[in-house]
Amino acid sequence: MQIWELYSEKETLALGKKLGEQAAPGSTYCLQGDLGTGKTVLAKGLALGLGVQEDIVSPTFTIVQEYSGRLPLYHFDIYRLANEDELWDIGWEEYIGSGGVCLVEWADLMPEAMPEEAVWLTIEKDLSKGIDYRKIKIESGKQHGIIRN
Image 1 (cartoon, rainbow, N blue to C red):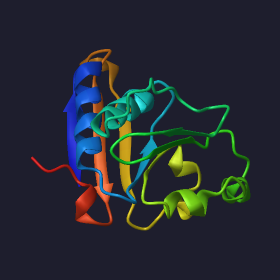
Image 2: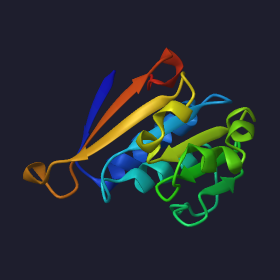
Image 3: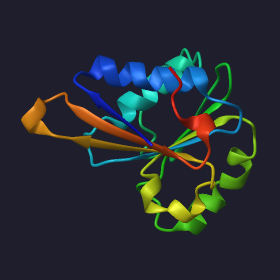
């Protein structure tokens, strides 16, 4: 497990970029945190690290957005799904088996559907440390997802 304490949006973006640069084919990143904690900022950074040129937006109403980069990026927001069956109905198993990178916002709503080797990123705010402060905990079942210096 790693814990990152970040004090600006720029630092959150940079951490995401580092994750994207180190992402391997088939990686899954599971984001969890309250509204407004910076999940989409982290996602934008990860996309930058993968070489995605498009603007990244949270796919709240479309459930998944697909982007081209060094590896394909599949950005999910599963907040509005009623149950795990809806995730499987959109082809979840095809995405996770495609060799691209899956980034799942609100993954904690359906943890049993996430791959065992997924990298989990928990984002927390603490306003007593500043409006842009974020604590990001990174955990993985496999070491390849943890950031290397």
